[in-house]
Length: 279
Picture 1 (cartoon, rainbow, N blue to C red):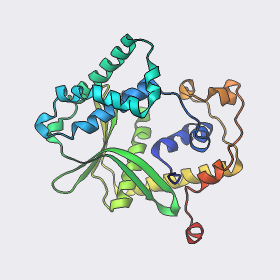
Picture 2 (cartoon, rainbow, N blue to C red):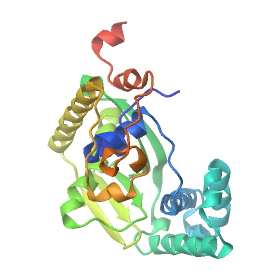
Picture 3 (cartoon, helix red, strand yellow):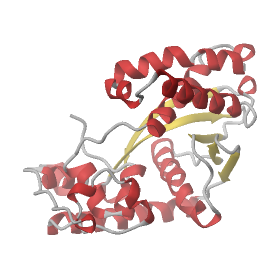
Picture 4 (cartoon, rainbow, N blue to C red):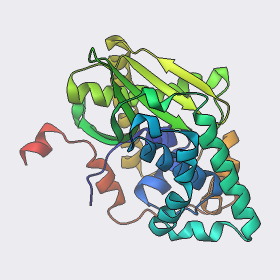
């Protein structure tokens, strides 16, 4: 079993609702598959495989031709997705929506002009104070002069202006990991929102990444304090309606589940202190 680590999504969970974070990270409760999440996974898989072929072959027709095979692969890896559709018509509509997203991607970027240095790259690194970070970077581009660009695909629509900073937190998180691993600060961070064709970019500075490291460290200290108390309070937000754990949430008149044996101890091992290293 992999060592416990903090990822951008789990960091976002805690910021959104500590109880949600607990159920996903400590209890590891299973969550049902959803058409939207499955569509995102399918489109990501197609865009990853698209770059397996030579640049002239990277056409919309070729990419759409990858959909049936990647749908079969998704069903093999996660049999739950087979139950998402009650009728063949529902599945057909869903696949058409995925195809539209793949075609729209070509209006945002020109794959024939790109030469990714990495795709679906798993990144793991310990930062200051021993916190282990982990994530998966959709694409890493390296220019002829060595400049690095980190790209992440989003199959939804771009965020409203007041949520842009929150969206870019994930990218700063990735940039921090890459910097600490390679000693190179990415020249550009790019979020590609395929549904509406928008692209968010940030050219991070050393000061920004140092501030991000401090922000993550402070966040982890809050997680540790919460874990040691054993109390993960729920927080009501506009996203509560999409939560899969309403049955176990006091906000929805549910009873909080008892903490699983050993769950907190495992979570606290995410940070490796000097004393722990010595032992």
